Length: 562
Image 1: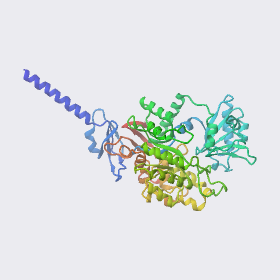
Image 2: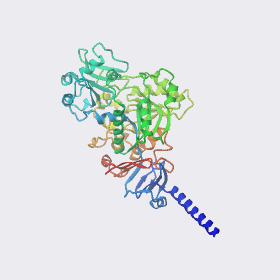
Image 3: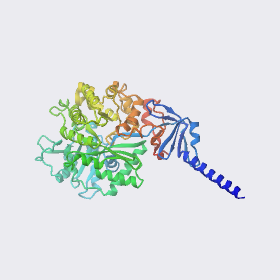
Image 4: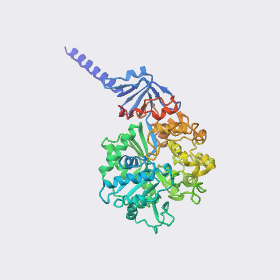
């Protein structure tokens, strides 16, 4: 009798042990009967992928993943749909997107008159003294392609200060009330790295370029922490809805990093953020830069939902507002060759400290002069370091010369570029820089042929955060109406696989994350973007309308299209 009991107990124990082992080997999520584009080095294609918790455990044929199905496994039959590694925007501004979602959006205004009417309507609903914040105006879309002057705007908003950012975020427009609050008059000198645009009599027009914007910005009342948090989460949801699983947040401070940590601790942040720590000269960084960088460096937080591994600098301005720095004058603005917001010496200083702190440096450069001087500043730091895996980046790299591409190669600098900038700028760019310099613009193929990768982003909200628009622009160099039919300087186009790599594996590499993100391989994080269209095979026009059916991060569905 005792022997029977012993065998019974042993039998139950073995059953429980086998059950536990079986459950530990099952998947929590399986995507099957689809087209799984791994974006591994061979760009291999599979039918199914299985994830256990946050990690991928198997990629292969549909019948091979059946052994991973358990009682609690969520199985999604893809019915042939395309699965890409979770799409990453390698250059975006989540807090600016949050502002755009909630502030006065004037992107639909086709004239200055329409902006005046919108502001007048908003002012009529507000108490005196309350700020009107908005933006996304672009004078290049107006019939008169000139900067506005504040007179007509000020007359309809005399009791409310108004501050409207231009679409590129590198200039803004303020009314008389806002200028008065900031103490800006004809006697106010241009700050270093900025311009107060003036009329023929020397009076401020209300347009503030680059660091002149700070003269007004510092007077805008701060939001409450709850307002900031709620707005930010709306921006996160917006990114998930277009299929993004990660964003390289281009320029934040300790306050934003603390917010990310708080949301991760509360399990409310559903988007991976690779944050670039801002370090402009006006920041309180006159002490030990290396120590400051080390204190804020984060290799991973909350299961790779936050990483802080690089420094963000702004060097020159933007092309649309003629702030990008060139050696020769703008073709359509004699006497102006752009401006620099910081000195090359400061870039070198930051880069040396960053190398010691094991951080990268990512610098905004658009014009030929901006790019060249930044490359030289980087080189001065890199030459003194033994670190050859620094992954310094130039953000935008819009206008370069062939000899400058050679410097990118020599010093291992990554060109981080945004394809939709090309298709947005192409209607006016040749007028800005002329027929010779334009050949060095948005030179994707030249960089690729030189052996570079190109992490791709959008610079949202300057452009749409929809990665399909970026991929379409990369492979066509056409606008969303299909113009020009042959593509704008089509010899610089990317292939569809290169464009996909730009938003996946190349973006991951540029963030030191290629071991965990960017491709669908066993052991990596289970981030997937499931599309309703096979953009690898579809006609280019179909890429524009492709939509995510699922956005999956850490093996969990974060967005599901109804």
